Length: 183
Image (tube, rainbow, N blue to C red; front, top):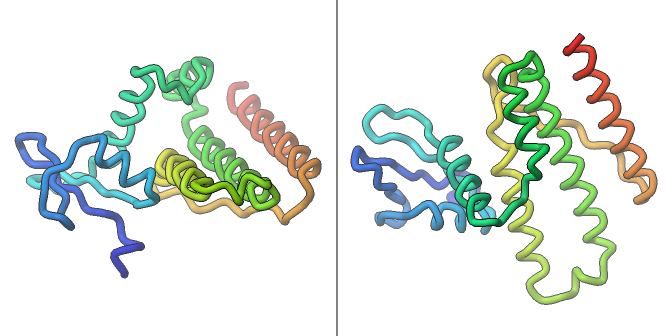
């Protein structure tokens, strides 16, 4: 596996300091967030126990950005996420979110490809940062069986109006599934 495709290994020492194994130096949460925005996958492990702490640190990065007023997640979404931890919907929520973000990512890629903005300097870097954020947010969510979420099948390419209708149908089907689980 090349360095480009394997995750950047960050080790957490007992002192809670984070160590970048590629550059042999200590890093901060902001450094890790920058690696992710640049499109790099990271894996954070506890040096002593070997436990994977990636999810914990990614959530901490998100919480810090949200607390600084960089609100990406609407209050209703956060509320629904908290509720999902105490209901049977827990088994559906990760899959729903992963599929929703995948649909969003695919739609954005199609729109970006048609956009005159694609020629603006720096636009590609912004697009890659957005993709990295979405991947970081959804990439490591497990399925109910505890295994990593498989990549959902993507719908065939269509025009923008058809994409919107497909997304609406997909969301309605997922909502109906959630409703059945709550009955």
